[in-house]
Length: 139
Image (cartoon, rainbow, N blue to C red; front, side, top):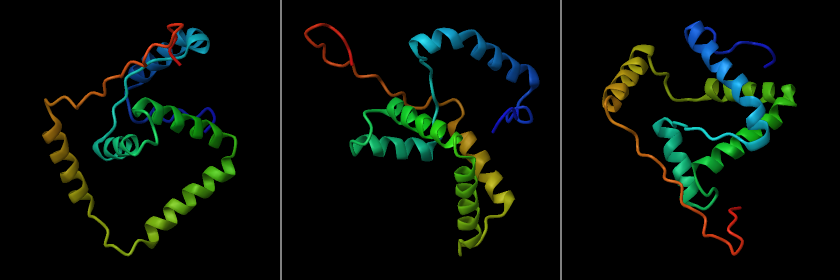
């Protein structure tokens, strides 16, 4: 993806600049000690992640994010593979025999979802403390 500013067209420049500045400020410390942050999953992704936890694939949403970031980092080394995946996704969409959904319907559903979610906090995953080992360390 290179030096492309992918967020520049989606958000106000000062908002993007504040995020870049925070990343710069935290980078050295995070390189040494890691980074903790809050994440939000839209309903479809949240449902999938929690199903994966129920099935024992991940211990929790944070592990799912960790694994996803590892895969994303690995894919960055293979732009030809990323391009092939994109082509396959586009082909899959074009080959889908189901009728398309008109844009008005998509935006109406997005508006309805936003109204359903307005003023309601999503459920929050609570970190379950690891049982203390004899030396008091967590894994």
